[in-house]
Every structure is written in structure tokens, then in C-alpha cells.
Length: 286
Ligand code: SAM
Image (cartoon, rainbow, N blue to C red; front, side, top):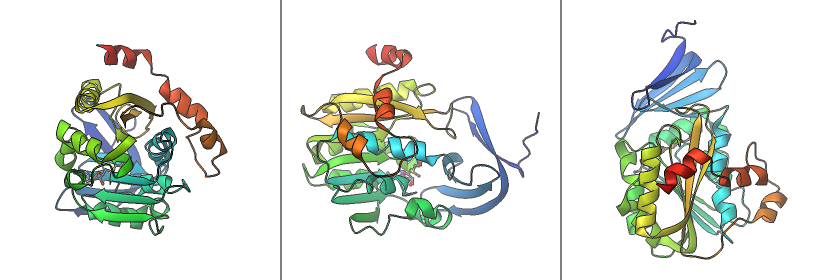
């Protein structure tokens, strides 16, 4: 059994989950304590660079495509004609890059509370930041909770909440007040999608999120499980919710015809993610 000595392995011990996850490292690259969170960077032996926020694995060069693709394409193809998109969080800019692959999107505004995350990503994940200068993109640094509260009513087509876990600055991204702000800011038929933790490890939180979204008036909730190799259990999810009735299903032909590169998402994966596993169906039905 390899002993996981600290100078050769990064280990995230997740007390809330009773699990731990390690990646072998060559060296520590950087660490900055921002006014909001502690951000570390490591060079790993097999996963490229690795970003850690407050001790939690966030993104690595090798596997981030699962998350960034499943936080963007299902929602964008489930909207009939998304033009104005807002990303709350997303400071590593991977989700922004995916959104900008959609040629009909006219405007994407990204609001992350911590500029340090984007500074670190620019330096250590330049590939995730390759679309940052797209003329359609606006990158802001502010509290996403405040931004959504102050957003014009019925002004946004898709809101992507790419936040941290519900701790620290991310805590307020999982409650009724925030979801009410999002619902107000969405146009009719608009979609909100949020990273919704692990269906295997965090079902009580996932149900709480879904109930809160429903309570404030969202409909047509869909939780999409997908692999996330460096997060607790490796099974993660995003939850999509719609404002008001209207288009349901997704633009399958558009998705099939899309000319942009993906590594995980395709229409089969999209349809598969909509087929809810039985353990999740039973938990949601209670
Ligand atoms: N899990 C993603 C992945 O695997 O690629 C990365 C998540 S992204 C780094 C999470 C971001 O949420 C962080 O950059 C953090 O600064 C941001 N965040 C947390 N609370 C926030 C808030 N209230 N408003 C805006 N951004 C927030």
C-alpha cells in the first residue's frame, strides 16, 4: 500500500463524506489566500495541473471537461434560442469557454466573487481561458448573490450556477432567496442549471435544492448525473430548472449538427443523463 506522504500526494479528506481522494504530485506551484478563500495549485504526475479551493479539489487539466461540458451544453440545447447567458462563479473560465462555443449566443456575463481564481486559471489553465477575450464575454468579480438580486427582471435566457460547495461564499447560492432572484431575472422559458453535488453522497442537500427551486416556482426539474473523477465518490450532478411552461425536451438536431469540439457531451450522453437512475428516482419521489 503506497503510503500517501504529503510531499508526494495531495489528499482531500472529506469529513462530511467519510471519504478521501488523492492525486500524486510533483510539486506545489502556488498558493494565495484571497479575501474569500484559499487557492492552491499543484502539478500532478498524471492529471496535469490541479486547483484546490479551501482544501477541496476544484479542477484539473485532465478531467475538467466532464464538468464544464455538462454544466453548459444540456441547458443551452434545452433552451429554444438562448442569447443572453449568465455564469455565477465559474472563475476557472472552463464553463465560459464551453458556452462561447455556441455561435448564436450573443452575450455571456461571468460573475465570480474571487478574482484570484481567474488569475490562477489564466496562469495554470490557459486552455480554459482561451475564450476570455471573445467580444461576447464580460468577466466581472462580485458576489453572484448580489448580482442576481439586482439583475433586471426577465433579462436572461440561461443562468449557470457554477459555484463551490455550500460553504463559505458559496453557501448563499443554495437557498430560496437566491433562487427567487434567478427566477425573476429569467425570461419566460428561461433555464437555470446549478452544480448539484453528488447524488450518491449528498442526496439530502440535492433534495433540499430541488425542493427550494420548486417552492419558488421553477418547473420541469431535471438532475443530470455525470462522472466527476476528482470529486467525492466520482459521481456528480447538475440540476436544470425552467421558468414557466413551454419548450420541453432539447434541440437534439441542433446538438447533433453542432460543429464544436466536445470530449464527453453528445446527444446520446444528454439523453442518458435524462434517464434518472432508480435510487435517485426513489429519493426524489419521497
Ligand atoms: N467545480 C468547478 C469545476 O470543477 O470546474 C469549479 C467551480 S468554480 C472554481 C467555483 C467558483 O465559485 C469559485 O471560483 C468561487 O470563487 C465561486 N463562488 C463561490 N461563491 C460565490 C458567490 N457568492 N458569488 C460568485 N462566485 C462565487
